Image 1 (tube, helix red, strand yellow):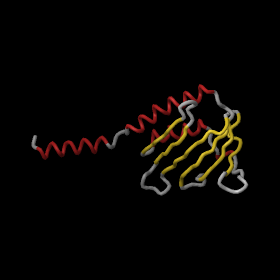
Image 2 (spheres, rainbow, N blue to C red):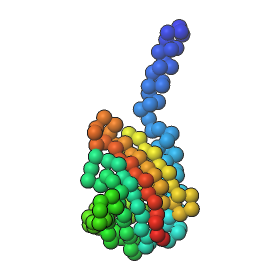
Image 3 (cartoon, rainbow, N blue to C red):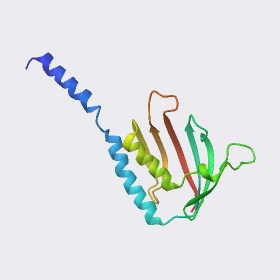
Image 4 (cartoon, rainbow, N blue to C red):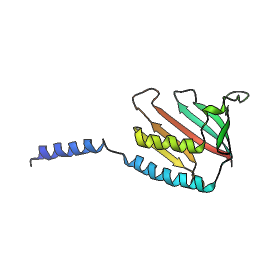
Length: 147
C-alpha cells in the first residue's frame, strides 16, 4: 500500500472510532452501577440535598430537595429570598438522578459524572444531550445535607 493510502485508511479508522461509544461513557456506566449499589446498600430513604443546576430550563439555580420514605416531599429555591417552595412534583430523588445519568449514558452525546465514594450519591454530573442546541445540556452539583 502506498503512504497516501495508509494515511487515508488511518484517518478513516479514527473517524469511524469517533462514532462508537466513548470510553468516558463506558466508565460512567460502570461507576454508575457501583454507585447505585452503594446507595441501595446504604438503605437511605429519608434525606435532604442541595443541588446547583445549570441548564436552559426552569430548574437552573440552587434548590433544596427533601425526600421522605423515598419520595420527594418538598423543593425550595435556595437562591431566592424567603426560600419559596416550588412544589415536590418537580423534585428528583437520588434514584431519579441515577436514572437521568443512566439515560444520558444510553442516548446523550456525552456524560461525565462523579459519585460519592461512601454512599454512592451523585456529587456532580454533566449530560450533553445535543451539543449544538442552546438548551442541549444539563449539569449539577449535589450536596447531601442530611441522611
